[in-house]
Length: 618
Ligand SMILES: NC(=O)C1=CN([C@@H]2O[C@H](COP(=O)(O)OP(=O)(O)OC[C@H]3O[C@@H](n4cnc5c(N)ncnc54)[C@H](OP(=O)(O)O)[C@@H]3O)[C@@H](O)[C@H]2O)C=CC1
Ligand SMILES: CC(C)CCC[C@@H](C)[C@H]1CC=C2C3=C(CC[C@@]21C)[C@@]1(C)CC[C@H](O)C[C@@H]1CC3
Image (cartoon, rainbow, N blue to C red; front, side, top):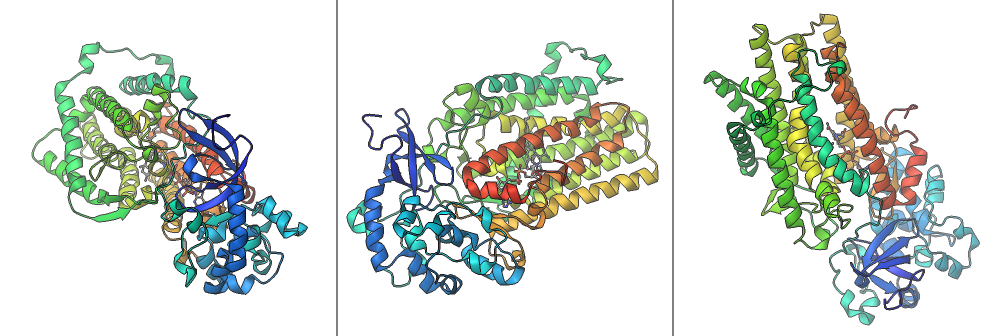
């Protein structure tokens, strides 16, 4: 890299995205096209940074020494925060130990410490520079470099044994609220451009591509719609067993129906109208890389209640909702077209947004992959958030409407006065799932899709087509494949569903509450691991049982959704099989994202919580 400012293998100071903290990093590459440096942090986190977010290490060391003499961030903290002050006396203190202080061992006493320490970036850091350690001439400190791991089981007194001013390889250029009368740090005089924190860089993480990369994207683009078509043709057969593969393809012209297209458009517009109504809460999303927090209208519960009233009123007005059953294929084709048009729009608009609005990972430079994966993180038209709306409204509420229509179709087709037990169970279980999701809509803001994934074909198709047209297969199947259930079997299935639901809801709520307010006193009994980002990871409670307790609950519920359909065919078990694959893949995607984000703290979490989804099994 002859013409660039920082050279490969050079040790420099890199700003942590979204903050004004600088860490010692090593330059591992420079991309002349994007003008971004790939740097690696001490804990293994790899990011791409702009030149303006990098400083030479020499300048920093000088300034840090002069600051140490006057007033270090560590000292300033210890003056203003009692828990830190009482524990920072020893001279063998390291930043890693400060980080470890946030791992709580005995509930109340240490959780009080946690509330003050654990989510404060300055106190949480586990990145320690070797160079700084050498300066301190204390060999003992070296052992603790970058290692929150060994601290999990130490006593709190030992954990907080740290002297950050000597050892931390990061510097805060912004005056903190708790600085008291502290003067702005010295760097300001030398580097005036640092006076105000600049917007965070757009760290497009150098990573392997998900979903089989570029070739995979072509495959999924063709396979997913074909698979939905196959499932819908299969479920329509009298004997939908695998021996009857492939199902006959109807004449292509019958797949298109303008009326069905109009109905889908009306449905989406109706949901959009409910979404924009100034009813319900305006919730804040998680902080973006820029530090900004978007607002979301979380009135999903209101939307499903109004939709249900409209559906019931329509039935009383004589509108035949079984139209949905008899025109299922046409409705799905129309929705598919809408999802493709939406994805094209999303891709085009993503070409015009700034780098910090792009998601990590959907920005490979390959048009097909980026179209599939999605580039823009939060595409919005004014305040209308397209990703949030699509994920939570037309498809999810549409799923319940379709199930309801299937129950009516079952009654019509089988001459029943009321739906079968099996149909009632499937309807009620899935309705509960959706209503719960909408009731706790705010919790969606802390899920992977909302926080990390770009909005492209995968989610547009997933939200609009995949969810309403494949998650309803069990109800569709029951319309013409009755499966009588005894009251005992009904009771057992209901129990299973409730167990799954309890695990799912409790674990999701725990993480959501913790992410929203890590100092929440009701969570003070939970143990946490601090990370270099300033966020902590839960290591006890539900998230200490397995790494994805919410997936476990969801899988148990999925089992309860398939059981009412019996064992005559594989088709109603399709959701269960698909869901295992989806969640195992999501788990591994999340693992690598978190590993990249949290570095060694994540490794420590994985060592402490060994199983991913099923305790002692997986
Ligand atoms: N029915 C369906 O089709 C689907 C349902 N779901 C359900 O939706 C829900 C959300 O799933 P999903 O978004 O995949 O994943 P999660 O809600 O599990 O979110 C994962 C994120 O949680 C944070 N996290 C992970 N471990 C910890 C920890 N120990 N302490 C604190 N935070 C942690 C991390 O984000 P960070 O640290 O950045 O906050 C991580 O990226 C689940 O219940 C899932 O079952 C999901 C997919 C499909
Ligand atoms: C088309 C692909 C193969 C996969 C598409 C995946 C999507 C269908 C799912 C990705 C994450 C989802 C979530 C939900 C529905 C399914 C999708 C969109 C929920 C909204 C369902 C209700 C829960 O309460 C929350 C879920 C969040 C994740």
